[in-house]
Length: 405
Image 1 (tube, one colour):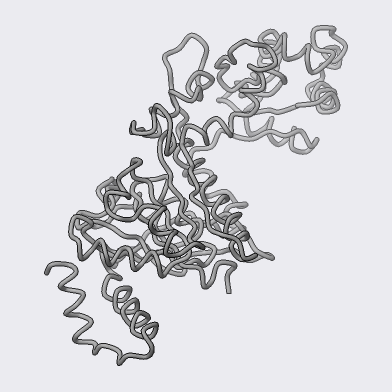
Image 2 (cartoon, one colour):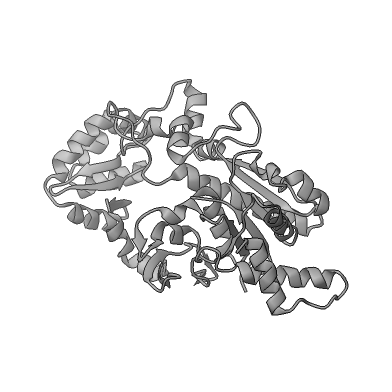
């Protein structure tokens, strides 16, 4: 049993933010039914492909079922509506107004099912002067200020390598859905949750926005350095870089002892965290003069032994092979619908020592249409007072009529 067993979610989402939210719920045991068009989620087309199946799509759509419905057809719109009314939660990441045009808006659905939790994820939110503008992770990183503090000073702009605006929106959405689910289980109404990528990007930039509010000066990009702490960045050793975070006075003094530079701890330029941050360029030059005397791995071993936080600059191949990652069991082999095998990073969450894992492989497009629609028809018949359940043949015929095949 997982925490969200017996919770049903209908997902009308593509690419990243919405599917990530749906997967977080699915990992916790929710039955997530992913409604796709005949073309499927656009992420299915993204490389790399493993014998024709997108590895990117697989990474965000495990533990879900896929149903194909053409929302341009009235019959399929009605089928989608019945699916939602039979569920607890709806997630969608269309532009505002699209769901309403398909008869799947919050107002009409909640009128029939007041307990429905309806989550809309968009670039800018469901109202306001930018509500109808589209956005991708890149454009939101740029607009939200993230790119203004990413990269090296005086260099061309760069974005965060991980799609942080997409995934932060998905995280906020999943957190909000579960908060409202608790409200519903106490007897309250559902809600229309409005999560925007722009708002989520500002929400996780609390240190940067508070710096601006406190100084009325824009934070600047500083590479790997920190505006209020030092030594706290990547440093060059004899064979490459490593990161060091001696972020308080105790760690600073321990660092000075380890490298044989006790005099640095008495230097007034470096006497406090604030002074070290203000003079961190001079500090970096002094420390790198010492660090060139050994390899990055050697410094990491020495500092780790002293309890000073430090780390290598890993590639993904290196971190995925790290013994801590292996111990936690975060990398798991999965079988794709075409029979090909691959690996994926599962949920990083553990519940009482146990990982969540993958209990349903990422789906082929429409793989569960018949299963889901047939079950829905069966429940509808039961709700009408025990009418005789349609035969399997009739259910399949009804399904094919829905699919137009």
